[in-house]
Image 1 (cartoon, one colour):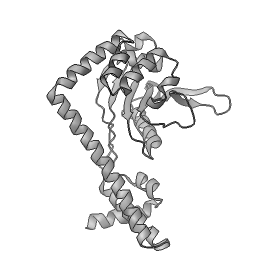
Image 2 (cartoon, rainbow, N blue to C red):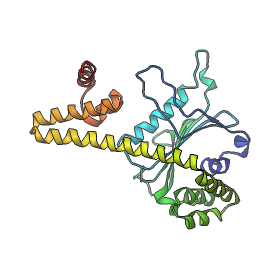
Image 3 (cartoon, rainbow, N blue to C red):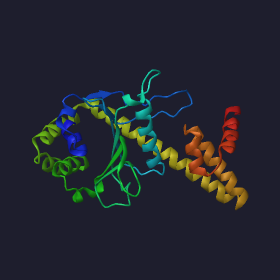
Image 4 (cartoon, rainbow, N blue to C red):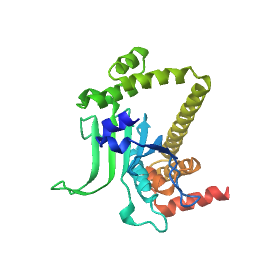
Length: 265
């Protein structure tokens, strides 16, 4: 992980003399708040907070979701007596198997808070790094390209070829083979993969049912009913009001009425 993070961020070696894997759950202020779970959450020697997430399916709310995670990584640092000057950098690294940043042909795109016209930084507290596995051939950082080729490998010969590029990646490949041979680890992996697929399937079905019902009911009236049906299905899946509003176009008042109907049922 140290070698991979150095390849992505270009930070000095001293930052990675000590890294700590921390709880990947993002703090919830109340029971109704959305729970965020990142793949890996890391703290560096200086206290910078890093999140690493792998996404294989493109969903409409992907960009705002990343912003939500990043904002929480910053605000989670502020306790009752904390000072703003004590805030540490929050960096989100997102590895995608699809083109999330369609505006660029680069494999590695980095986003920070900068002045629009003159591009000088406002602050380095927030950063998003997107690594696109579909564009690895364009990556000029050789070590990073080797890591991404290893991550995107599917066949054994692809893993072996990527592993030959670096002793550290060879070590990772050896561990991966041991992990793959571990029956319990394999079952846990398959269970997680099934849960992900089931969640995607439920979401797709909820959207399809609502849209189909809206078409069947006719133009204006049917569209309204269809949106309401989509909102009901998304609410039952645990989506918050803001995300339901973005998915359906309904306002918060309309969604609150639908949630009250569900609670009454």
